[in-house]
Length: 254
Ligand code: BTN
Image (tube, rainbow, N blue to C red; front, side, top):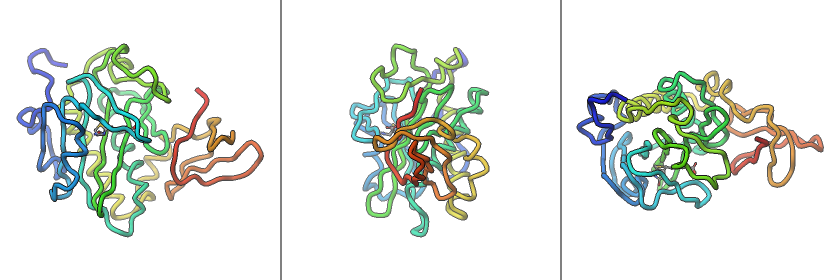
């Protein structure tokens, strides 16, 4: 991070980095309950985003909280109006791919997508995606751990967590990072709108974290084969049964 500029996600800092239509309008609160709530029912156009420095009631998947000390993370929600013919659960993968790409540019490390909604760096979760659908509008929430020190990360998370800082040893400017993330998301989302997950598969497939790992799905042990072109996870159980998993959480051997 450059010493001359304060690390901030305020609009006057981020505006210089934004390109494209994602980020217009850019709603910013120094603190809020959850950025998701700033967009639900807002009536704003596609590409509107909400960003905060601190959430008092950050939401994770499966009803879990999403916690980050003030000014350490990227906490952003994006409003989308996906076309009705698209399969909405795929949006988690679209967003996870975009976040992985932004993380790779920021860290020069390879990032992976853990089906269905996590971004991994060095086998640890650095970001999670929360898509919420209300009346045809999707609010995609992204929490990316950036500058937390190790002791500031949740210890009791089901997946081992990390921040970009714990993996690279350096802090990052969050303003260019959030802008880069929005640009990648816009690019991948537009491709998905046109061609579905198939249009992203060449970039997604090689970043498939679970591929070949030993996993447990609904209590049944097996091996993850791959994320399929329709977004489902193919698993071969130890009893030889092939399962196509639509949603949920997969435990994997660390
Ligand atoms: C997960 O459980 O992995 C998903 C976490 C999503 C967290 C983000 S932070 C920005 C947005 N606002 C929230 O309250 N949650 C999402």
